[in-house]
Image (cartoon, rainbow, N blue to C red; front, side, top):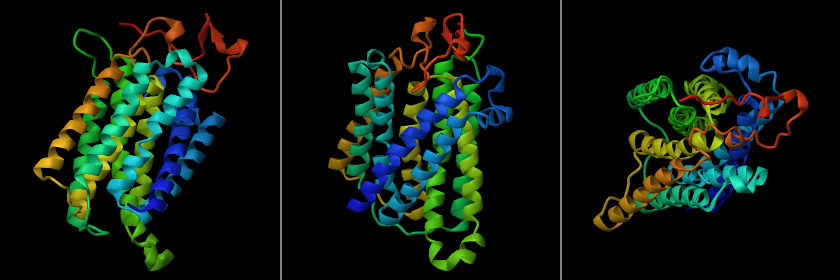
Amino acid sequence: MDTRAVILALGASCFTALASVAQRRAAAPAPGDLSFSVRLISYLMKRPVWFLGIACMILGFVLQFGALKAGPLSVVQPVIAGELVIVFGFIALKDRRRVGLRDWIAAIGMVLGLAVFLSLSDPHGGTNDASASRWLIAATVTAVLVLIVTLLAYMPSAGRTQTGSGRRAALLGIAAAIGFGFVAAVVKELSTQLGHGISGVFLDWSPYALLFSGAASMFLASNAFLAGSLAASQPGLTLVDPLVASALGVVLFGDRLNLHAGPASGEALALLVVVLSVILLSKSPLVRDVKDPDMADVLLLDQATPASRVGGNWAGNRPISG
């Protein structure tokens, strides 16, 4: 494993965590009728903190780009997954009582389980580019998965008339993460074109695919941040992204995994840790839909002003029915 790639990936994880916090703060007060509407973008553009989130995302992207140049996709993405713990750290800084021991165990369990799985699977080999037919298949499957998960996010649960905010935020976070996993693969493809000069880059399809897939994934993430708490959306964003990116590393670039009996057992155990950690976190008040206004999601790093309070609640935090 290249040390430089790991250091760059750690830097990327810090900036992507900051981006999530800033974008959640920007999206949280938005009216509910802006959900999955292009008007949401217009609303966010009036929020300076949203641009801070964009700046952090760009810096994270630049560091991720450098990390992918220095190391394989399947190694870089799990390191970036450390952003989940950083995000929980921001929540704890705002109110230590909101993040309990169970939440920390769940967050760390998810990150370590993912890291162990990908370490044991030992992705190796592969090429720096993929055929057009493979890219077409990968793009189609990715788009279909994103569409299915997004539709599920807006379908009410059994026995309910509307989708719970925690469930919707989690599913939209997963949809965005699938898109970002594809973005990471496109970044890997784009990095191979840099040796062809500026003209070679802009004559290739990858920068345009990057712009489109990145914008679509960011739109989904913004809706996830609007829908519910950061603790609900961030696990999906953090875990699914590297898994999709690693799967695309195998499908597109021919990365090979270690599937021998011994490592495979460890990989299965690591995935079990991830699943149990997700279940543990799903039972936390940080993620569940709650009716108590005092337990509603806190706008991180923000302070309420008299004009921003309505009936004692934070502006934009609406009671959750059902």
